[in-house]
Length: 357
Image (cartoon, rainbow, N blue to C red; front, side, top):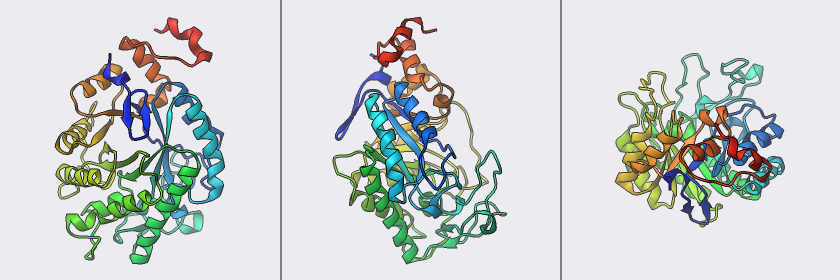
């Protein structure tokens, strides 16, 4: 049988296959509230056969939003609609997951298809924070360098968000430490110029991420899977790199993290990314082989045979799909047909199963 459609046990859940809906920002919320767009968007991927459906980057605080229209989980009012969404996902045979995020200096943006710029405070924006007072774009507002009180608030916000995620019915939590957002900003020497215990050495730069993991674990049940998404490299000389990602992943495994979701880039405008199909897979492979932790591969994976080959090679354990699932919410059902695997279709769609082309 194709590895893409073999189950995977992660603590108290079993994924029915290895296909994961990667977090994809929808920029469709008001005040962080989920709505019917999110129900249909996430629910259709569960109907389409994915094993695990992850929300977009969900802000743990209002100032942690990437944009004014980000999904949020910083207050109890967010729980009700999210619970409706997780219930639907579970009813359709998939596992629900939430990605908890703080954008740091890359916060306070407008909706990208309306105005892809950072908003100033006079036009609906808000002050941003970072490890150091260094903006992402030269034209962005200068972020406030977090003091110890601010760092404590970040950890408390992740912990409180985790409690709400549990109440909303999520079965997996993923901590977002990639793509140039706050936790990644602490990891990289390009954005972290601190000279205290949160900056300088590798040990100091990873400190906040490890503390956030611990804060989440204070609330998240030990029997529930915990993921961390990282950018394995900044693609910039002198930045965060693959060797540091391997070292970090070993420490995350020792702390009880179950999966490293392996992406790259997003921190520095000088990045030089050799984009091609599967260009990030080697990072997932290196982390998996050198640490033994379960890894997810992501990035321009668009075909069933390509996904299967990644698993057959032992480069990763899970395949995270984003844009391909925007193009085709039913990719898992179509992939099963292409790989000669008979999977259960939703009863409502069963009559169409034999006419796949």
